[in-house]
Amino acid sequence: MDPDLQGWLDHLRGERGASPHSLRAVSGDLGALAAFLAPGPGLLRQASLNDLRRWLAEGAERELASATTARRISHLRSFYRWLFEQGRVDPDPAARLQAPKVPRKSPRFLDVDEAAAVVEEPAQSGWFRLRNQALLELCYAAGLRVSELVGLDVSDLDLPGRLVRVRGKGGHDRIVPFGPPAAEALERWIAEMGGQGPLFRNNRGGRLSTRGAYQIVRDAGANNGVASLHPHALRHSCATHLLGAGADLRGIQEQLGHRSLSTTQRYTHVDAAHLLEVYRKAHPRARNEGGPDDENVG
Image (cartoon, rainbow, N blue to C red; front, side):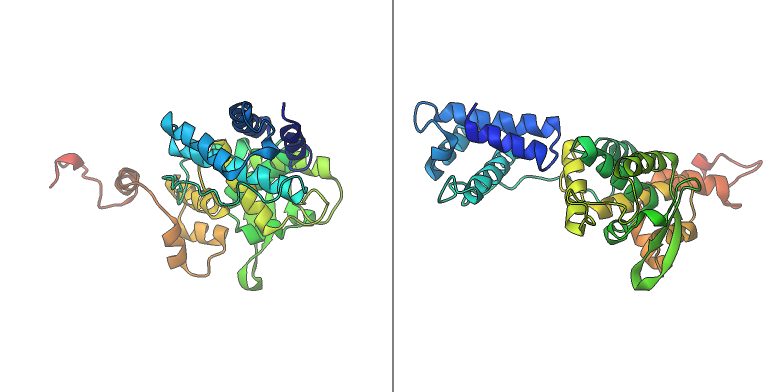
């Protein structure tokens, strides 16, 4: 294996906690580039911008999907930026590469199966995985804003009661419930982390940044086929799924910490068939006792 590629994989594994899936993808793409370069420059660090473009063009000739090309360019840019920062290449041959526009699935909310996959399968491994799964589970279960998530301390949790005290916008605190999966993920993370202080921490022990939380959610989405996922989508999914299961808007308003009910209404998406079902079961004028069946009423 190319020595620089081996160093990059070691860096991703040790410093960034990359998952085996992510490492295989990086190794596959950059290994393919190394094989392409073998008759010419040979080493990855010797590749020029034209070499990279020729390799990408070969993929285009084989009609690789635009998403695959975009992924390859992303791997090239990250790898060569690292080599440049290490002083192993100058200039960075990948800096001028432009990724193709890819139709992205960037949902305003996830369906239930997508949400479950994202929170149960974060992109990283080791202690990173424990932290990320706890963060993802709590974000989705409680519908928290990303700023609220990273601002939590261990002391804000009531694990036996499955409650968390949240400092919301405008200094308004609220108590928010969460379910057993989030409680179990939090218990595992706290047992690993130990102590008090910030609930979600970076690899240096400090409080995780908002940017770091965004990256965790994006990586988990990409790991499960959901591109450009952001924490707000998990918060929105929480509200949507609560409403879809029959929760009332006032309860969701309290859960999300909205001061106005009209704000909560913008977060909710329930399909027409479910709304019709709820209406027929709940509204006193929706039942035709002794009359014609609903479907036959014009």
